[in-house]
Length: 577
Image (tube, rainbow, N blue to C red):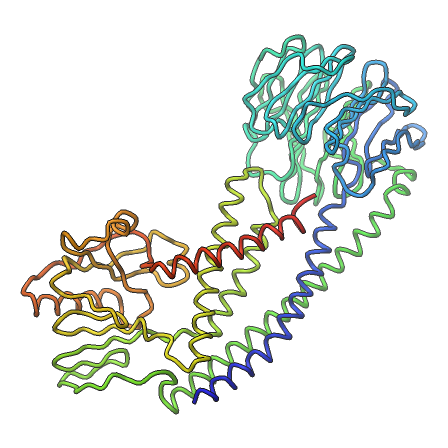
């Protein structure tokens, strides 16, 4: 019989392993294209000079564009074109000199209006910084440092510091007042340029979770904020009092990266995903028509089109693989059940007992001395199916890193724990089947006059204070292994202090029996009453949904560490910039 089982499982593996390998390659291909698509950026940072010409950053280089004559000039070749974010922001000083913040070196580079490097200053920012400047000071929104600082323009030393932000993600300067946007606080703070004291906090009416930073600019009549939502960005005009003046919805996929106000009062917004500049007008956004810009962006636009096609094709092929895997697993489960129905249980042997008048259910046999309640057989295909369903969720949790680091690693931890539980169960099941043993033997529940056995372990009736049934508060384990569990508490002197502290009870049955937990608890309580004369009510409680042995804990921690290591590797391979 053991050989038949091995042949059955071998046939299943021969069917699904090639599909899993193909699916793995498709996932790698899909993620590679998706991440490349995600890392494609149009002209990100923009500012304007006294003549109304636009200076912007594209692939780390700085260009000057004159809309009036449709002329494009390359001002600065930074030499780093491998990834976005090599230049985090750009601004112009009063004399037309160009200032850039560079995250890799944590420096501020100052260039002449013609693009010649004239000065390099230490930025004193933690990772990324947005920049504004006048003729005396440089102002930085230190995004990861959660502060705003002013540097001496000549020497680069810190003149003042203002803290109390979550993520200061945009900065602008007008009339000797520094304006700083903190998207996570729905706030724009006004600071005195001279000493950094707070003039006013303007509370904005921003709504919904946003992707990407808020973008800030100032005109003579209004404070401007743009936000990138999941599909369509919004540009909002506010009075400096904080009351909303106007909301303009962007086109499909609009991702505002930066904006500037020209000396004539015209507002220009860059679109990070559509590779377009827009003029902001009262009735909406009007694309800026330019043959020069179209030529500059055409290589990326062609690449973007190819990547989109690749992700669509690979997604369709992945859906086909998933459908084939599910079909194979369902068919295997069906044929396994049919063969079990024809030949009886595959593993172990039923307990030899003498039946009494009442007819036993398929999950139990009863005589005058022993009641046996059998656990459900774990199904390999259902375990594999659960693992296949949870892996994409884990990939999404790992790759979509939010601003809040604690929340991110908490999500990754939940995935790691869930995957660990399934992996341990799957390995134990396969190991037992290879040995021809009954993997459920340690869960077999027997009620006897002396007490009840779980596997080979006896729990004497006289040591038990009460039985109970709980709804799970540990939703992770509940979703994997059942919603309710039978537990018990020991009498004083027999208590398991740590388990009682963690879960509110001393021990519990694994929630894997065909019989309903309330019925199991009722049988346990009735037998305890019969042989000790001590009747108790069935308690209802809440707590952890596991009765872990030391070996279980070691296995769980070890597997969790392995998956956690793989998760971190995925973060560095796919998630980092």
